[in-house]
Length: 400
Image (tube, rainbow, N blue to C red):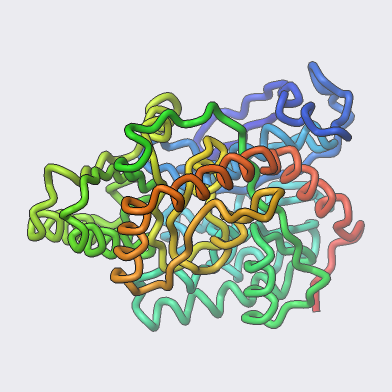
């Protein structure tokens, strides 16, 4: 893998095909040092993709497929472009334009939508000479808390980009349908490559019921205030809750949330732990009895499958691609409960059911373990992406 991060000296590293890929029945046999005869894809992504202080599902997805794509015939050259995407300043826009301009004609380029979709004036002209695909983690206008004029502007910019490129990649079937209908895209140009999951040891939990875990950046879109309101309504139950996720993206919302927690007298029971990764995140999952997620919008919900990969049941809002992430066990059992968005009372009612009905807990835990065994790995994601890249037109052209 070549790292062409803006502001960093390029470094070429040889990436072994990942062990995760070898668990698939049709995994390639090219394990070890990969040959340089592989096709090359230039992957343009946000500059903070490796920042442990601001983890996100999109960043984790981008990093992981860089490792797994070589197992399916694609050597990855990373171009991490710093900037306040999707609304960069002039210097960051110039850096992106320069990165694309320096690529040889006919290059295959995968662009993270957070970088690409806000700057059609840079991306669209490059469709004339580069073979472009855009990976959309979240439609820009679906971000919660944007001013109406800003959301409309981002929406229009994204539409211009996605209508111009020959291939668009979404992370769930719901997201495919959303992009096709909302932006008027040809269905045969929009493809799904759902996130994978690495099976992890079964979570030990605490007492099997009382410790709740929310893994999400603390932002308006993730809706942690609804969780606080629901927990306040069941304060008589013996719960504790840890919220793991970045605290820097929306400082005003974080301050509001802290105030709400204090207002309800929950500071000793609900902890905003900040971002965690690696062993720290694993420990958080290991201690959890129930995963809770109260998002307003999700194209998939990687935290959900990370929980299910450890056999942890899920209580989440019924939005976007979350039902796909929750899924079903092979026997048809549902490993989670979905509640309507904007309904803390429904969330509180389900929490009472979780605490009060042992049969409900047993059923959900059994389904979670079944779903765990059936989750697709990241090799399936890389295989889907590789197929899309392989089918890009040989000659760059504008997509009508």
